[in-house]
Length: 372
Ligand code: NDP
Ligand code: GDR
Image (cartoon, rainbow, N blue to C red; front, side):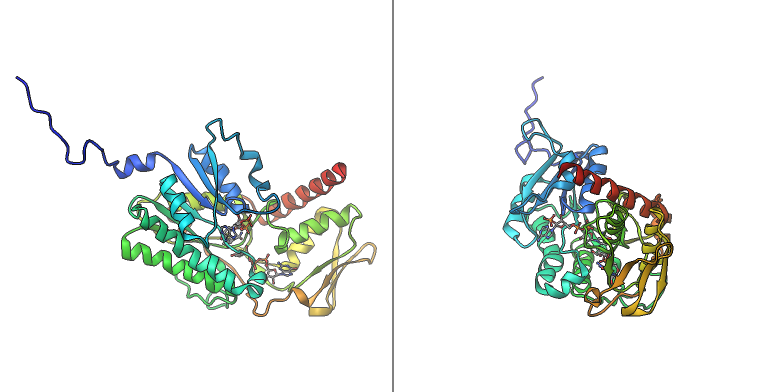
């Protein structure tokens, strides 16, 4: 017997279930050209994602950290780059509507704390309002309930010490335009979760470093100088506050935590940290030890110097121009929640991190010499 065809009310278009949607594994990463963006992209590609990244137009080359992942755009590449900027809403809407991502990682930011005192309005625009623009672009594209959203929040939110070690429930007290801008980013991410039932999470990440770290952040500035000094290309390094303490881990470990946050049943905020804290001075001493230089510290504050014990040559000096108008003296994270719920733990120790960075910089200085 002939049966009449059933005509579906949506003209045959099958709305994908959340599971089908997520199984597509399409990620959009802002800040893909940065330290974390490059490691996260490697991880996502390994996991079978197609990764779309937003890059800024620049007069000079700015894709050095992801160059090794780039493939000919005519050969079905797994990493696809789009020009854009967190200050341009229309552009964000266009990219999201085109990409239809299942996961969005917002890593783009003016991320330098000291620079944020010089460029405070710009930092607020990119790091604070930029987060809102991205969330709103997702909403405008009708993807609020489909996209899982990661916000790169920071231990800089804790700023002035209120409680240690710092955990998810520790009150915030940011100490820089960067920290204050990121506070907006943090709360707007929470707000979109509560107001629109969006799967949006904050990763409150403590400092994480690597050979790909920008060269003006203190760890990389130190390892680069140690490499140069050990090869006779520089005599001394000038630093700011040697007493500041940080909880330093390896960036590769931290991007795994970002991904894990978006694979949970419920959206939540997590601290990622090592649970150890060390002063800048200790990082300097350990970095020099790797190239066989033992540093002896003399003097105090602005007059403090670090001398090579064997030769008496001054290798470290303090220059107050690197001091910040308001400093974050101590960051020390408690990653218990991430350990319990995500099963996350850093793999690389503090000493291993320093060694990897110093050796990579020695290699890089030698390679540059070779090419020049
Ligand atoms: P980087 O400074 O290495 O990278 C920042 C990225 O943001 C770069 O790709 C940069 O592009 C991009 N960017 C800057 N301004 C804009 C803009 N207006 N629009 C779009 N993209 C922009 O930072 P990290 O990789 O170290 O950090 C990643 C994120 O995590 C940042 O949001 C940072 O604030 C945060 N964070 C970092 C921690 C760390 O210890 N590394 C700890 C906690 C949080 P370009 O290459 O063109 O400059
Ligand atoms: P931070 O990193 O401000 O913690 O922000 P940075 O490496 O810049 O400074 C760490 C500490 O070292 C002291 N310091 C110096 N810092 C720099 N950059 N240069 C110096 O010469 C110097 N001398 C001493 C600083 O005063 C500070 O106390 C980083 C960024 O990645 C942020 O985006 C991120 O949110 C936080 O880490 C967590």
